[in-house]
Structures are given as structure tokens and as C-alpha cells.
Image (cartoon, rainbow, N blue to C red; front, side):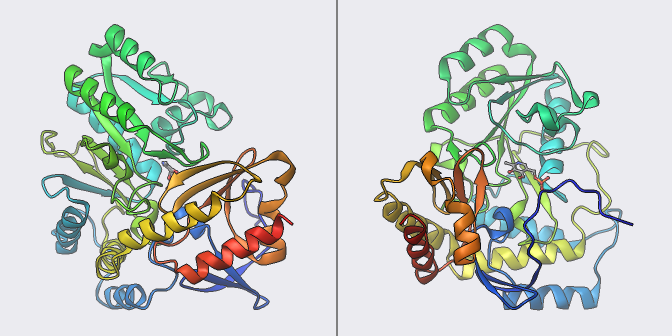
Length: 376
Ligand SMILES: Cc1ncc(COP(=O)(O)O)c(C=O)c1O
């Protein structure tokens, strides 16, 4: 049987990893400035993470959500404390798309409305509602097309306010990334997020903060949306949550009340996934990784500012977009092929840095030196 060929891939097979480094099957070492697409939050194969998963695996990996799973409560408690959302409720699932799917559905259960506001260049995942709220017609199948989602221009306050004035009583939710990832590392402005909050409050709509990529400490705050100083009704999370173990979830504000069977999942919140997520939070806390993300992020951004070959530099903390001038479109490829450095990209010409939150200054310098060399 062959694989269903949906990914254009690099011809590299990674066999081993540690911290911010990975090794291929020929023993070649690479610096991972991509974090496996923002997933590796605490570094590869962190010893505490490995030990906690092994320990859990030897006890029990899975049992269904029909019984008490105390480790879920332990995770909720720790997540509440570290994110500062102790009064929120946690629903666990397995991926970012699923987290957004549940968030959008829950909003509709809450206010019994159908209309969703999303924004240009948004990416929210590939399940049916999440993909319908994703601004890329190429990945929306006919069966997912719906009139229920309206795309408004990102960061355009006047258009958003007008839209609410006309249709506010039909709007169920507004979904927005704090910093657009696939869209090219574009930050939602503070005043835009504040406006979303106030309009959602006024019209009883639900503000959904898609924190799948920009959340979990990547920008130095647990949720990048919170830089705006207002609270969302639902935060969706995934990527960094399990450091590679599939787990996602939504944090739900206290005014949204659960009813039995309104949401559900077979695998979500299983013992092993919760152990992975707890190990991640324990390391984030013990190693002060939010502070490290902010410090190394600021350091990289300050150094990168000095390169005239960069058309625009965007992002916060360890979520950085380097938009290269056209004549330097080769840099991403050179970083990988000549300097063994993985980075991400956003079309047409943006290099995305999404390294582990415990990346060191030495590793940041290694990247900067190689980056400078590719420009010569
Ligand atoms: C902002 C955002 N939301 C949702 C998703 C979907 O997450 P997943 O691939 O885990 O379903 C992604 C994935 O890249 C994302 O970047």
C-alpha cells in the first residue's frame, strides 16, 4: 500500500531528536527553528516528558470518558493556574481543528445562532466548520461550503462595527487568531481584539480566540490574545500542548454552561495525552519558558531588524515572520540545504520561526550567523 500523497515533502528522514536539534538517518544534525510546525514547545525528548509518559504508559494509557479520569482534573487545575484562567472550564480533544470545531459548535449551542465571523487569511483547521472559517477556497470541499461564515478584512475596525450593526443579532461567534500563522505571522491589533470583545458582549456573541499556534506561551504571554487586555469567551489550543503528543482543548468561560452530550469524544483527554500535557506545563513552569520565549524572541527580533534584505519583520516572542525581499527568496532553501536549519514558511516569501520555547541564545546566534551567511 502506498501513502495518500497530500504533502509536498523534503527528502529528509528524521530519526532522533533532542532539545532544539534533530538528526536524520545518515547522522546529519539540524537546528530546529520550526519546532515541527510550532508543536515542539519544551524541546524534543525532554527527559521529564519522556519519563512522565513512560510512567503513565506503564500504569494505564486509555480508558473512556465514561469513568472518572483524575489526571484530567489535575491538568485542568495546572492549566488554569499557568494560563491565569482559573475560573474557565476545560474540554479536551485531539487537535487544533477539533478544538475550533467544538468552539464554534458550542457558541451556537449557547446563543442558538448560526452566523460566524472570520477574517481574511485566517486558518482554523480542516474539519467541516473549521475549514469553512478558513480563508482558503482550495481546501474547502463543496460539502463544507456554507453561507454561515462571513470573512471580513483582518484588523478593519470600521467594517467589523458596520457588520455588527447590520447583523449583530444573528452572529453566533467571531473567531480570530491572535497572530495569524498560515496567513504570514500577522498580529491582530489590540484595538481590534478590544472591539471584538465589546461587540460580542453587546450582541451576546461568543469571542473565540484561536490560540492553536500563537498560544501556549509562544509569545511570552500564555495566550497572545491577552496582550489586548480583554478576555475571550473560548480559547482553543493544541500544537504546543502535548509537545507532539496529539491533544487539543478549549477553555470555556464560566457563563457558558455545559449540558450532557452537547460535546464528546472517544480519545480526547485520555490518560496518556493528559500525562503529556501535564509534563509540558510542569516544564513550562519550572524552566520559566514564557520568560525565555519573550527574551529570546526580543533578542532575535532586535538582531533581525538590522538586515536590509528583509522587507518586513513581524511577530512576537518565538512566533516570527521574516518577509524577504524578492531577490532573497532563496534564503529558506539555503538555510536547510547549506546550513542544516529547519524553518517554516508562509507563501510567497515569508520565513516563519517557531522554535521550542526553551531555545537558547547560543542556538539563536547560530541561526543568525547562518542567516547572515545566506545573504552574502
Ligand atoms: C491557528 C490554527 N488553528 C488551527 C489549526 C489546525 O490544527 P490541527 O492541524 O491540529 O488540526 C492550525 C494548524 O496549523 C492553526 O495554525
